[in-house]
Amino acid sequence: MLALITGAVEDRTARGIAAAVGRLVSAGSLPAGARLPTVRDVARELGVSPTTVSEAWRSLARAGAIQTRGRSGTFVSPPVVPRQSWRYSQMGPSPATRWDLSTGIPDHDLLPDLTDALKRIGDGRLTTSYLDEPVLPMLETVLRNRWPFPPEGLTVVDGALDAIDRIIGEVVSFGDHVIVEDPAFPPLLDLLQTVGASVIGVPMDDHGIVPDRLHAALTGHPAVALFLQPRAHNPTGVSMSPSRAAALAAVLAGFPDVVVVEDDHAGDIAGAPPVSLGRHLSARTVHVASFSKSHGPDLRLAAIGGPAPIVAAVADRRLLGPGWSSRLLQAVLLDLLTDPVAVAQVAAARDAYAGRREAMLSRLRERGVTASAADGINLWMAVDDQQIAMVSLAARGIAVAPGTPFCVTPAATDHVRVTVGLVADGFDDLAGALASAAILDSRGSGARARPHPRGWR
Image (cartoon, rainbow, N blue to C red; front, side):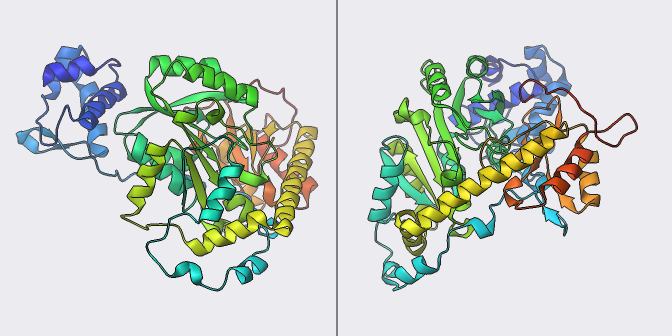
C-alpha cells in the first residue's frame, strides 16, 4: 500500500499528493475500506514533512475520499459531495439596488414573446406518455441542422449547468486533472470541486485560450477534459476564432485522451458565428447549446451533442431521475426556433446587446478604464481594488459581481463583472460611476488615466 501511494505521487506538494491518492481511489487501486499508511510513513518515503501529508489527508477527507477513525487509522471511503463555500454564492444575491448589474441574466424585454408559441402548442397532447422519446423528433432535427458539427448523439436537458453537471459526472473522477479557461465561470469550478477534480487554469487572449499555454498545461498535468466557452465567454466576452479553434485542436491531437466540453451559453444572442473544436475533433467534443439567454431562462433547456457513448450515458442516467425535459417546453422552443417573428426578435436582441456593449465600452475608454465586452451580455472591468470598487458602487445603488470567484489563480489585476446587457440608457452616468469606482488616485478616490495592460492576467 505504501509503495503504491508513493509510486503514484509526482507532485510532492499537499495538492499533488491528494490528487495522486484521489486517482488511486477512483481507479479502484485503493478500494473502499482500505487502511492507509500513517502520515509519518508516507512523509518519510516521499521526503516531505508530515505537515504536508496531513494537509493532503485533510483535503481528501473534506472531499469524502477518506475518513479518519481515531486510533484505528485512516480508511478509504466512497466519495461524497463536500460541504463548502461555493464560488457561486460569492456573486449574490445583491441587496435592493437602483442598478443590479451582478446577475448575468438577459434583459426580459429583449426575450421573444411566448404568447403565440404557447397558443400553438397548448393542446396538451405532448404530455400523455412516459414512454416517448426524450427529445421531440422535430426539435432534434432542427437542433442537428444548427449544430456546429455533425454530432453522433444528441439529447436535451434542463439548462446549460444541468448539462455540464451531467457531463462531468460521466467524464471526470476524483483526482482527475481538468483544464479550464482562466478566468472561468464560477459554477463550473464549483461543480468540478464537488467531484474532487484537480483544476488547472490556462490564460486567455483576445481569441480564446492560448494554445502554447494549453500545451504546457497538458504536458505538465495529463488531463481527462478541457472545458471551454467558445462564444461570449463569461466574464470576458471573448469569442473563439475559427483559426484559434484549429490551433487548439492541433494541440489536442497530441493528447488523445482529453475530452473537450464546450459551453455555448450565449447561443443566438452571441454576435460571433458558431465555432467548435468538434469540426476537428468530433469523436471527443461534447458541445452544449443553451437557450436560456436567447429565448428565456425559465425554459430551462439546453442541448448536448457529441460522441454517442457520452450523450447516451447522460440520457440513460436521466431515466433514473427526471426522465426527460418537459416536452411542452421543448415544443415551445421548437416553435421559437422556427417562427419567423421569434427569430427576428432574437436577432433584434442580439443587435441591441451589441449596441449596449459598445456604448458602455466607448464611454469607459474615454474615462481611462480598461474593460472588455466583445460579445454577449457581460463586461469585464479592471479595477484598482475589487472591494473598494464594489463598496463605492453599492453606495451609488449599483451592484456588480466580484471578479475573484471567476479566477482559477489569483490575477495580477482586480476585476469586476458588469452585466451591461441590462443597461438600456443612462450610459454616461453609469460610466462615470464605474470609472470613479475602478480607478483610484493617490488619495484613494477619483479617476486617473492609466495604460492598457497586456492580456487578461
